[in-house]
Image (cartoon, rainbow, N blue to C red):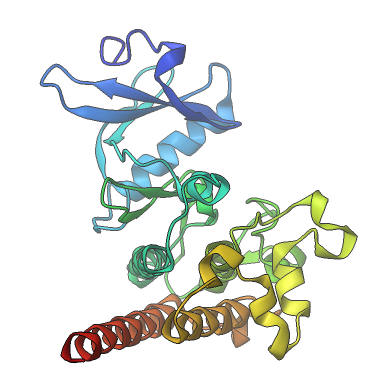
Length: 298
């Protein structure tokens, strides 16, 4: 691993968090990989890396980042992932020079929802516990891979919540979980609702430059009345957009608001979200196809 990362050189760092770093590595057979290492002396970081190994060794889905190997017997455990070259969703939404069009955003929403629905349908269910735009990686074709399973947990048989002190990322945290310390599949759903808002608005989940009442994106969106929802859409997406695109964005906003319901009981499941998003995507594609066909026949 030292050779693959040029002795964990700083110019190979792809990203870092409180518990460790991710490096770009090149194996002897020229395969490019991502290598995650816990920080020296960080017990929590070691625990999270080991937790990721436990979770990812049990799953396989096209929209989850793939674990290629690991080394857990060293003082600092290492994980080797497939390399996903296009960065993460948060970076693309932040980059004003790299506008993702609505069709790509909708594809990312569908695919990341499919990855999460797969986790929730496992036996026992797996809760991600840190769903956010920076944990959705994008490959060279802009396909989504849900990543970072350091906080993920397997639910116990016949117990559909995980009791734990509140962990996660501010702005994405389910308020019901924050109050009760009970994390359920619907807590992931809440966080995914915030990601949908990010896709619709290109705004951060938490932004203190928006003014006191609008700091939290989820609160801001939920406070909007039905007729005002389009006002928060990224104007670069709506300018000159067809009625089909505006219609699909409005439908996704409705799903996002359901995900953000105060009570988990009132939120849809990830499986229901996948079905709804797939329907919206197919309606949009059919509408665009009909438009092209009519244009050609005219």
